[in-house]
Amino acid sequence: MANLQEKNISADQAQIEDGTPGQNLTLAKERDDKSLLSSPSGIDGEAALRRTFAIISHPDAGKTTLTEKFLLYSGQVAEAGAVKARAGRRNVTSDWMDLERQRGISITSTVLQFRYRSHVVNLLDTPGHRDFSEDTYRVLAAVDSAIMVLDVAKGIEAQTLKLFEVCAAREIPILTFINKYDRPGKDILELLDEIEKQIGLRPTPVTWPLGIAGDFRGVIDRRNNSYIRYIKSARGSKEALEDVMDFEDVKNLDPVLYENTQNELALLDAVGATFDQQSFLAGKTTPLFVGSALTNFGVQHILDAVIDIAPAPAPREDTLGQKRKLSDPFSGFVFKIQANMDPSHRDHVAFVRVCSGRFERGMTVTHHQSQKLFATKYVTSVFGNDRSTIDIAYPGDVIGLVNAGDLSIGDSLYEAVPVSYPPIPSFAPELFSRVESKDTAKYKQFKKGLEQMSREGVIQLYHDLEPVPNPIIAAVGQMQFEVFSYRLANEFKAPVEIIASKYKLLRRSNEASVKILGNTSGVKIVKDKNGTFLVLFESQYWLSHVTKEYPELLLEPLTI
Image (tube, rainbow, N blue to C red; front, side, top):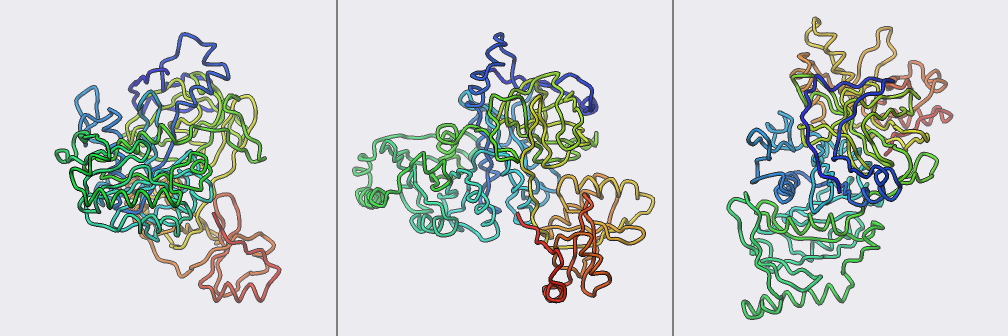
């Protein structure tokens, strides 16, 4: 496969110019054999070397720690916490936003692209907090598989159960990593039962712990019946040392532990809880691994599994239900937009999942929604908030279009053969507030920040039907409002006041229905950015009242 080639580019150089062919940027050095790259077998072969996956979990399960340790084992990190760079070292910035560092949680999803075992890995680290589940959902639209990280002491928590259900509903293959096994926690068999009952996936352990949580001796690899002994590394800064021996040797080390573990393994065999590639790819079972991300034990097992058993990119269905072949001309869709990743330049990046074809320098594509030509003049690969220029990308890769101001989440791009991919739905908001600028002199910045946060999906933006429309912001959780307020004040220098609204429910409507509603008590009519009519209700009582009084009205819930 082509070697990764990194180039630096200043953000003020990175501009997108619609309709003008220009220079592109590269993920890999071009091969001398151009015909191989342009042939279907060449594109299919490159796609087979891609792995694009997300890491999902509830907060504090160790998701970001596992992400960092993947970078350690892939060689991107010399030791945990430092990334290789030309000019010395810099901090790993999976959580790159200042507010993320202050809160100690992931607030926005992050793309990390690196090589491991001759494969190109596109890792999407997602927020764990329920308030940011909408961002995670958008990321899940762009991946081929996911790793579910569970804290051995907590198991599956209700606040993020919805995300796991989304994976199952989409039939996204899920690998499970039971983390923090070096600390006290639940019985491993209890966790397996919890996974199957709550998310409907049958766990098929690939590695099995020797010892209970908190008294972790190592794991048994059920594929070859080997015992990998747990050896602590110094503060988890280096790759874990592994002492590999045959499971039968455990009998001489600890006969009681050997017998207990042998009984557990026999039980797994008896109930058929053995890894099966077909049922895993069908989204019916989840291969399970055990370890401790903090001490690096078991990290390489799950990373190798991404390469060995997780699916490579496959043809994706368009809005007509037809699958576009990997070897068809270039196509992709926008699944995320992020502004101010480089605060000194105030730029924004549209993240595009490549679905088919070869993306290459000088390519001019069509923006499906506007039918305008779009020149991909500057494109980057992304590593946290660091970027390097790319020239070539293949199905499964995630590319960043810098300052692509006309693109929105869910938009499709294509070359030659038209295609439109299914839109990415939004979560139904649960909180509604009015928002006002605290400084009238900063109104222009306030308006710009409001529009940008809406484009990114940080909040959903509506306007009422007053003579001078007032902005109303909506969110899944309160922390989205906090992030919105923080970013308006710090990135746009436009501090805001958020005033809680009395409205609690939202329904999609149409012009005929809102005319009938008129000035009905307990409701408020607003429009979204597309001009769609929406009806806000003060409570379930008012929704029931209106529905009973006017059964002919269109009042559709917003659902995923």
